[in-house]
Image (cartoon, rainbow, N blue to C red; front, side, top):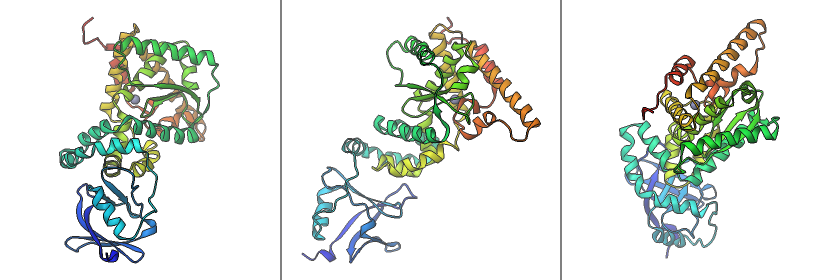
Length: 365
Ligand SMILES: [Zn+2]
């Protein structure tokens, strides 16, 4: 068999459009030659820079090209036959976690549907995608985000261990009371010191919640307000706001990467997104509503949250005054600006104070 001449007709995602194009592949010397069927587009890639699929997986074969585009071939047997015809026996690239692949391949049927949904609106699509992300990947996104944020913003907490434990238990009791069916999302609370973030808290995909020492100190006499802040953050986790935001801001790589197979290009966008994007107003309202319901169910008046906003506001005013007196103003004021998903950066204190003060249970109790 003349390996040099063997061509394969397959599907190619160019990295910009969510729609695949029919292309032919041929190995030509040291290069992979890719041509659209109308001949309008032709690319040559050095073989060494192509990320060939791992052969032992079942289902589709997927190949990443150096320019970020992607080949996806549904018929594994046909791909392998073509590959053997080139005289290649080894050289498969292993870089895959099998369990993921199985999950993702199982989702492949959803892809056509999702691509069609493209035109119906990015918010809908990204939130749908966010809810399709398997928990294992969500966890990995959370870990990647956490290690990134930790290296930039966080140092170990200086709070006494028993104070940390007491707050954790207080929050756990409210989670339990408000989710009697045990349907709360998984969460994991960590305290950290942070010069840059000041009095603050945030949550990441996968359920990691961080609260700063400064915030604990600011509300030391009002632990129920701290529980309210944690409940707000758990609301973001429950509604997958973080994942939704990440997917929305890099929709193409999320669609091509996460759903079709390889999440690495999507993961690469996570750090930059985290420090530049904020949640929508609707997401914040949803998290506040979640916090109010949780507090109420846990036997705490939602109005307890008001003191949090009042003290954050007082701190901001203090910082403004310092800034006037001294051009080199305090980092705490910038906390919101450097990490827009954190609670100190959320706008509209007045509206939120009103929300918690006037909140009534929808059950009318
Ligand atoms: Zn929030």
